[in-house]
Amino acid sequence: MGQHIKDKADPFSVVVVLSGGLDSSTLLAHYAALGSDLVAVTVDYGQRHRREIDAARAVSAHFDARHVVADLSGLGTLLKGSALTDSQVSVPDGHYAEESMRATVVPNRNAVLANVAVSVAVAERASVVALGMHAGDHFVYPDCRPAFVTALDALVAVANEGFPTPRIEAPFIHWAKSDIATHGTRLGAPLELSWSCYKGGELHCGTCGTCYERREAFRDAGLHDPTEYIDDVTEFAAP
Ligand SMILES: [Zn+2]
Image (cartoon, rainbow, N blue to C red; front, side, top):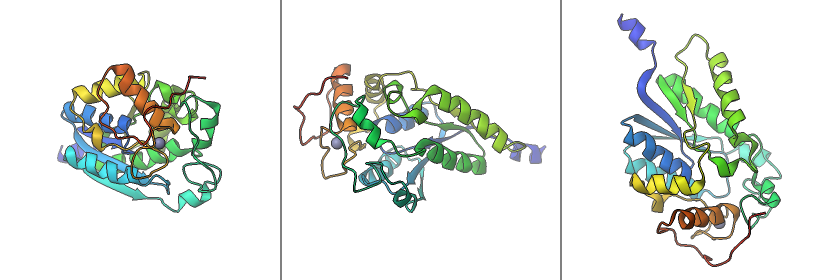
């Protein structure tokens, strides 16, 4: 019997893909509130906004979660053409749903990130891999849509057949970002420690797509935004 227990997934253990942003920080708070045993996985894929890795470290520490940083930094140099990994491409300002935000797509990113987390989860016998995508991501990022999560779940089952296989959960996938800001604030998530800005400067710029989305989320939720922005007055219309 003892051997069988070893072969089963731990029903309380959750591997959270933690970028260090608002959504994944709230996701960690979400599973912490459920009493889960947490492993936070952050992938260094050579992103220019490296501050988010430090943010992920701080958020993990807040929740006493075990934090793993997977070093895939060499991947970034191969991903030419994305504003997030290629210093030749400038980070666009504007509304998150603008066509220009396609420059911030990192080729196949979530498939890579999620599969690194799945590997950790299989090794750790965790029962869930949690992803923080939300409805606002669907416009621009194909690897944040419900079809991606469904396909990934099927892939994980096939790729790990015969082993305790984690299921994929994305509890915010139909939520607006303002819902996430509300949820995170209610749960007492340390959102002030989270980092969104794609430009990765000393402060959040306030005008890149993800900064503007962050500003909108707190404003739409009617919440105090704990973030310090360089520019918190410029407005962009939704396309
Ligand atoms: Zn920014």
